[in-house]
Length: 273
Ligand SMILES: [Zn+2]
Image 1: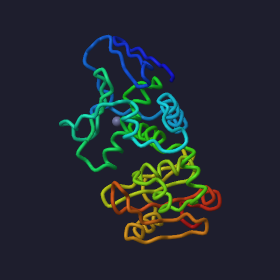
Image 2: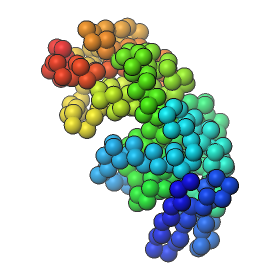
Image 3: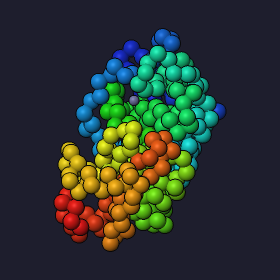
Image 4: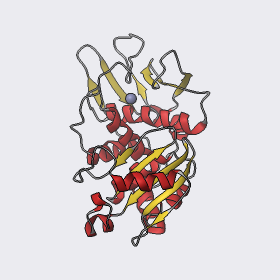
């Protein structure tokens, strides 16, 4: 196990490898500190997606988690012997504290996909701290780290080899993992673009950093998404396209996937591939 340490102005924290779980020594004894607070301002992410992958890798190998496949957030809870406490008054996100064992505050009464998505987000913060990255962290970048811990690069590559850019099958390949996590990984590992939205959550776009995405949905994207949200499917020559998805977390959702082949071969911004 990698032993890592970080020192702050008035606080000394150290990761110990005793008994293969994370312990944090708090010399100050102030009862722990909050890693993820909704009142922290997210700093704009200077860190790239590649960094997110590396931060996740370090965390996964330090904890001796599954390097190549899937790390269920509840398995990581067991592996870290984290204590879960129910969601406090704070209404937006779960929080992490050390007091001195790892304590994750999460919505315990929530449906499993919601609970897991909150937990993996918090493990994203823990992994970033583990890598010595100062907070406040960029929240979207933390989601990236969390997703990379949950769905390992090789598992995503394998799924893409098996199913191509078939949104429905890719989602099914990962069981009850929320679509947002699956398609975030598919886009970033596979080098394509994913547009995602559901009836309960707005448009999200995942794409490699060099690809510029219009801030608002173009006409063709809106039309395709409408079809998907109504239960339809739009196939393309490259076996990517638009699908209607039954998301374990968000219910009826629509996904548009554009494979690297598509991106290379057409002006996809105009939707005329
Ligand atoms: Zn957070």
